Length: 286
Ligand SMILES: [Fe+2]
Ligand SMILES: [Fe+2]
Image (cartoon, rainbow, N blue to C red; front, side, top):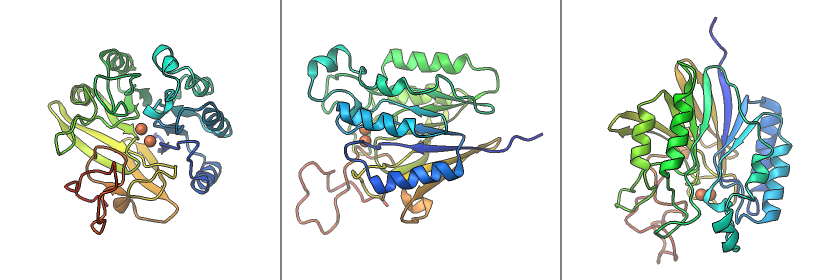
């Protein structure tokens, strides 16, 4: 007998403190009415890792019926208390972890986390990803211990490409990580951080790896309105629909490559690029 498809809601970058309340209320309604099997939140549940922002995130996650996974994002380590950041960077995030179920059983699929953040790096900005050797080892060991035939859905905050098209370093150790994942029975890696959605088949030396990114549910939008991904998983793979309040079709919501950051691309009629925006040679994304 064939299994009915599994539906997951893939949310990301809610950034409590700068959340989009209208979008979040809509997602809550979707969850209540459609009852997805599980919800994966791929990082940045808070804006500045403040205690009140973690409290709001915990309240919201606790109010949801389906089981939830949450990855830690670069915004979820203390910004202003550097001692805490260096000594115990995930202390505040553990308030969220305490709410989550240890394991979510889906038919033939296992959700496996991959940590891509670091408390400090030998480069700026520290907001970019870094898959440490220890983090990669832990994820690969978990995948390798799965029962034969189980497909892994890897969840992380940062997309894994190591460089943007202009050569800027993105996720350290990302290329090696993608090659390791592509050698295994990995359906896709689900990520956030960019604040735009994407669904890219990324070539690696070991074959292609599917990278699925979710947009943001915060007011910190990049080039598309707030959204989340609806993932339908069956024996043939994953179908992705980018859900949004503006009814923009999925292909128009998805960017076709991973940019360097979550800042909006420069508009052609901008007289001067605002401080901190992506370079003018970064082509606009749709
Ligand atoms: Fe973010
Ligand atoms: Fe992020």
